[in-house]
Length: 280
Ligand SMILES: C[S@@+](CC[C@H](N)C(=O)[O-])C[C@H]1O[C@@H](n2cnc3c(N)ncnc32)[C@H](O)[C@@H]1O
Image 1 (tube, rainbow, N blue to C red):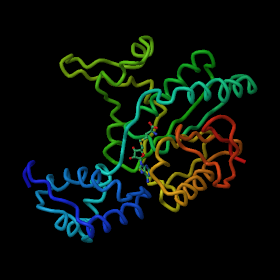
Image 2: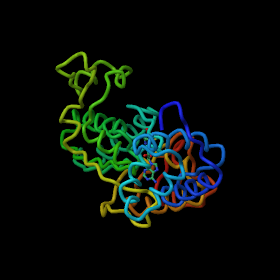
Image 3: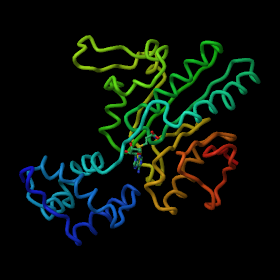
């Protein structure tokens, strides 16, 4: 396939692929997303030198190649948009209404375990680390761990590296840029790397939120599950939110994305602020 030849996804192929994606990843693929799916999968056709989607389906739905192709398909099918301090009021709430009040109660000696369950390329995780390190300047006995997981191995690998184009931190205040990022020795690369201090308590792992059981045994004080539920049906959202519930400590907090809600799902959480919930 050359760049000029762009094979179409016919009805049968679209049905097969969209049903598979919805079943395995939970991501809804209604007709309206057909063009987007087609264009994203073109990348895989090109990479595999395949001529059309029939060949791609044969390759994907083959017991031997499925194991190799499935993770690569996930990388192109998922939407990984994220930012440092995305939806900033969440971080203000976390600091001022959850962490600091508890530190005051415990005389400043406490541990917080946080999980970002759809962490994409890591900006959400390192934002959390900046917030925690900021609090530690005053509450030096504060301990914390931050776990990051995602279904896409490609974004996990970027997150682990913590290397970003300089434009990604453009809007951060200068004191945070200076304190937490190192510029590449080759200015022409226009890259920055997060400093070790942001990585020391951070751990990444692969997790499909659709799995019946999660690989992680730990329980968390706070779970971020932001801007991923929108891609799932209500039934799957409910399943995921119940699974996350098992990994929250009693009185733990759940943060969803600003366009996500659990209203009407009848789940054991209470709303304490817009898109922030507490386990009941
Ligand atoms: C739009 S990003 C959101 C990133 C970050 N939470 C934020 O709000 O900026 C959504 C992430 O969810 C991940 N994702 C999609 N389906 C998933 C699933 N079934 N299990 C785990 N992660 C999934 C995608 O790979 C992507 O990185």
